[in-house]
Image (cartoon, rainbow, N blue to C red; front, side):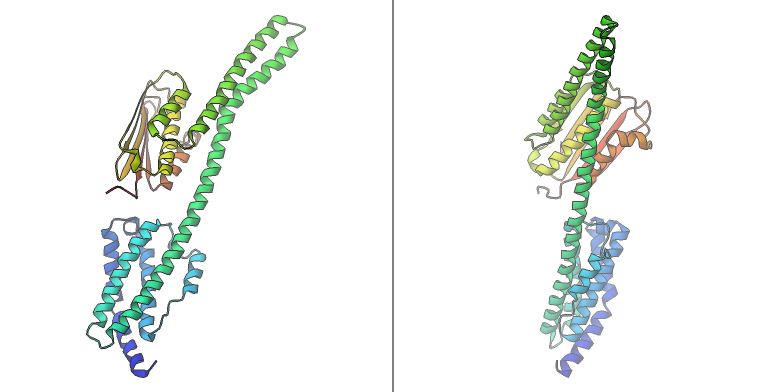
Length: 360
């Protein structure tokens, strides 16, 4: 690089470096303005700011030397060590932030180089460095998010296996134990007390019928977890599988299901089904209301009952009724789960799930 070009690079780089704080301030304001998690959560905003300063350093050094100074290996080491942006922002939010940063930095580069004879060359060098620095970080951020999702999927699968094990234990194991115990008693009374033996056989028979019904119920639930064409039909199928009870159920689904990706619809079904199951099995309710409202930008689903209610702060009750599983499913979709309950005042569970691919 000839001395005059090097001197020019040093001069422009110094002038651009003096603008760093202004660029960062503009970038932060833009992030806050788009109302995404990177702008609304202070920790994520500060981490994004730190990444932006590193990008500015890459661009400044590239201008100073006239050559690309983006060290992709160093960036990879930072992300692989877990020192990148924590909190696992969604790739959509990362791309929005990248766009805002790219525009903020490029505007400052153009203003700094304006009027200089080598402006075109300087802007080209800066733009190439900017693009490489930003996109390298986006790539590693996306890979970190994928790893995060895989971990959550594995956790969800383990939770689902535990739930199925609980279902088998609670709904099948109890009645199967009754069958076994009464058959043992019947055998013990077979020679000494035929009437008691017959009574135990009758109890065992009724318990075996209940066991078979419980197995069919669990199997029906598992079938309902597979792909389905209509959310309301799937929920009504679950209600039919639950059988007649003392509670009156009002179920309604409004909106166009075509707005919702199939995998999201399946998760909504599992959440609502679990809430309905809780109302049936734990609430002692006379009325259960369940509505799912689908809008182009959001799903709101809620289940309420007039049952006994409970203390939401009770970990024992919360863990035993699938609330942790429901909350995890909703949060994996970027949504929020709200629980309202008190002893003697019923329970209401609400789920709010954004549709990121909303229909415009």
